[in-house]
Image (tube, rainbow, N blue to C red; front, side, top):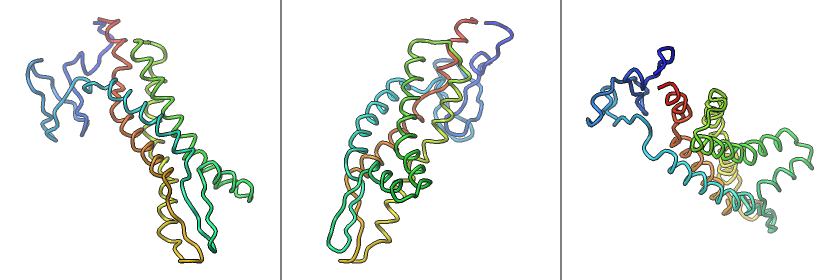
Length: 210
């Protein structure tokens, strides 16, 4: 290996998945346990690519009904109106509440789709053993971890409205199947980002320098 390139693997170190402690790697056949938190250590997350692909595909499948099916039903004076995420965005635009419409669109439509596209891109490049712009791909992965949780904004809003707006025959709000599918998309993409091992992006460089 090139002496100018030092990595945890080349120095015989393994990072703990839970507490991120750098641990000295024992013999290859030995079971590796983190001395700080007791988590079993792996040089790379087991079946990372397969698990991430399965979660990404599942999230793409749930993404369709999450945006097609109604997410809430508002009952006001005996009249019921069901709204999807996009119909809610359009309503806020028509009423002049652009900031709210923008927040809902970005957090509930754009971010989940962007996260799935980024994870798909990372999976394909890793499987193709691409050496293209590793730092930028690592930054993309970090972005998916940071922004992914903000997709729960719409679910929080629905939960609060269902809990607060319950005026009997006058007005009430009920969660619809779209909310369940959307929540599934958010949770699955969070697990997909967690199951992907970003160290796989750099394995190609290490192999080229061996």
